[in-house]
Length: 203
Image (cartoon, rainbow, N blue to C red; front, side):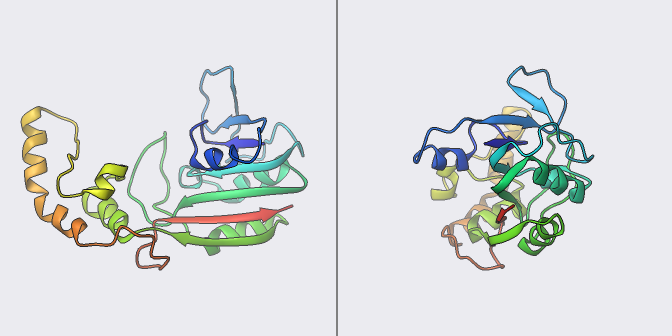
């Protein structure tokens, strides 16, 4: 299995680990010194290992790529015949680094078109998200922790700066905390609350 642009703590890996022990190769999308990772420039057609992997996981990466069609060509090349590609990315998000940022999100249709253009067969795609999480991203520019998702009113929301700045920031956002409190924390499965897109494809 290949993990492209992610690390060993991806939630998808935790789910897969329940079924079987999987040998994983990690590819980083930026040049970093790590003996356990190989660099894969998704913006250029440079897949270093052709047709080796039964499963390729690319999660929360596309928003950091400026040439998405080339990214899908590289992901396709990694797959063995009959292999599966799982792609997940923001549907609606805010600016963040790692190291560059190019898009606030993509629809499932966008993923479908790019996957089908390289010859992959769609199995399923869609979006998910809770209204509470959606509002937190766009009102407060934060990804909610589990505690904040459960208790938005009493949770602390950290920002850089002095203790005084942090105190006044948390005081100032109290109205937004009430907005979060009265919004749904369940995955509603509608476009009004969507934060993530996903797709599963087969070569």
